[in-house]
Each structure stands twice: as C-alpha cells, then as structure tokens.
Length: 405
Image (cartoon, rainbow, N blue to C red; front, side, top):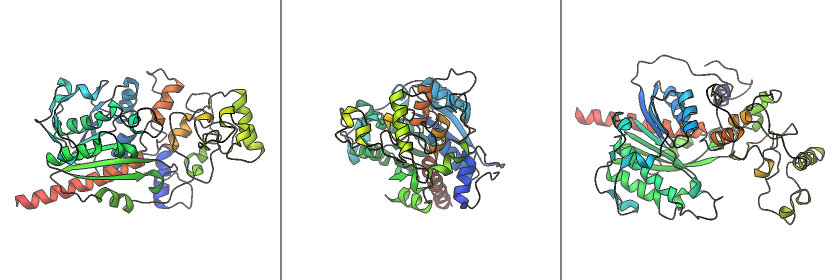
C-alpha cells in the first residue's frame, strides 16, 4: 500500500492513516475467496473491517448476500464492497426457527431453515456477520429499558447464521446488550454451543486499537468445531492493541477541504448555536458554561459534552447520527467555528476516502449521511474481531486435518 501518512508515525498508525486517506491494499492471491453474508449490514462499516482483515491474511472477500431494511444503506454497501445478492428486507422474514429454553440451556427445537428463495441459493458460507439493531440496548433509551422487541433479532441472527451453515458467526452490538431483559446474549451463546460452535465474547474499544475515537462494541465470536476459551477474543484484542490517536491524526489534512458538496460542507446552524460556538472560541473553551446553555441546562447537566468543542490532541467522543448538531454532543470543530462535516465524521468513524457515500444514482440527503455514518461500526473493531475469527478458523482447519490423518 502506498504510504501517504504523516512522518514519524508508528507503522500501525501510518497504516491506518494511509487507509483513511484513501489508499487500498494491493496484492494478488490464489486463495479461495471468503464467502460472507452480512445481515443488518447498514452502510458497511463492519463489512469493511472484515474485508480489511481478509486482505491482511491474503484472502479476497465475496459478499454473497447483504441484508438490511434500509434499502439505501444496502445500496451504499453494495456500491463499495460488491455484494452479489442484496436484500432490502427484514432478517426475520428469511429464516424459520424455534427456540427451546433460554440462556446456556437454549437449543433449537428443529434445525433453522432458510425460507427466502434467493438466500437459499447462496449455499453454505464461510462467515456470517451481523449487527442487530441496538436501540433496545442503548443507555440513551430510557423508556424501553432493554425490553425492546428488536432485541429478539439478536437471536434471529444466530438462527440465520446456523441455517446458512456458517463456519464463523460474528455478532456485534453495544456493550449493554449483555444486560438485556431477555438475556439474549446468553441465549445466543447457548444456541450456538448446542450446534457445535465454540464461543468467545469481549468488549472491544476502538481507541485501544489505534483509532481516534472512543467507541466500544460487544462482539460474540462463534467458530464451528472449535473449542474457544472464553477470553479468546479479548486476548486477541490485547495483542492488536495500539495507542489511541488524536483527532488531528484522523482529519488534520481536511482542515481546508470544506466545499460545496454535502460530504464536505458543515450544516447551517441557528444564530443561537453560532453564538455558542463563538463563545467557545472567544474564550478558548471546549465545554460550554451552564449560563450559555439552553434554559433546561442552566442549572447543570450530566451531558457536559453537549455543545462542546472537540479536542485536537485527543480522540473524539463516540460519533452518533447527531454529529451535525452541536446540541447532540461534542461536535464543534477544534480549529474552525463550525461543526464537523460528514466526511470528517466518516474519517473519525474509520471510513476511508475511497468509500463512496454519494454514488451518482442515489439521491443524497444530509439526514441519510448522518444515519449511514453515525450508525456504523468502526472498521478497526470489525478488523480486530475478524482477524481473530480467521485465526480461529485456520486453527480449526488444522485440527481437522490432523484428526483426519
């Protein structure tokens, strides 16, 4: 890969910065393509991380099918990563299954079965990856308190992976999925173990893997025919640990890039929010004082990052779909009197410049960009989990070969 990184960076930091700036890994391989089905795929953050991991070990990826109810997100994923089949439908409509019991005692009453004709023709796959909706598990959702019916889609994802005969099942979600009212994580693990998979789980943190953002996700890794230690995934994450990078590392070269396209332009703000940003810069502050906040915040707030200015020499906070609004978090640019642009948010999220959120055949709206970028899984997290999965798959293959001999 061409090195376009800043000087005096570590190899890891230079590698990821070159990727962010649009450079792609080159190299030929005769290895069999890695067949992947990506469910709840969104715009492709997890899929991109898995693709980068496959390339790192000399494998090409073949997204045999991608699935999401958001047809435009599916289009973005396919446009960039080249899926053969794309289904804009509910994952729940693809598989028939029945679960008996819960937690570690859970098992399927009968073998899960693919009921969608297009997906049935895919055949068995090497890897099934999925990021079921996490809103039901989020700490920001105080109404449903982890009883959201969408939580059941976590178990549905397991059923689909098993029905596809996947050698590897990789699920991601927010860390609080472990506290779900219906105990979906333990049930998912029980189902997978009952089907002959070894299971390992861990919370991986992007900033501990060399990213410029504090973002963490819970991963469940299952490998068919392989006994995994409970901390297998966690230990792999530790081996790939790297220092957190500052915001300047991710977007420093974009300071003067603001343009007229939606990707490269910050949204227009209300006069009162412009005044708040001016106050931050005029007083050299990163946190807005209570007396400059809306009336509902003036007696104090626990969300001190709201209306805040990003620190140039620190990792950014978690990027959400609200990155275009100062009232949604710390999204004011460090050096310029504006909020960050969608391209800057995408960089912080780990998307390289070649990843195209604006294909010519797709009408582009700012709210769509916010969703595709803010809801994505940071690719460095998917990369770490997928490298671990590929290592476990290789180990299982070697064990199988020795047993056959």
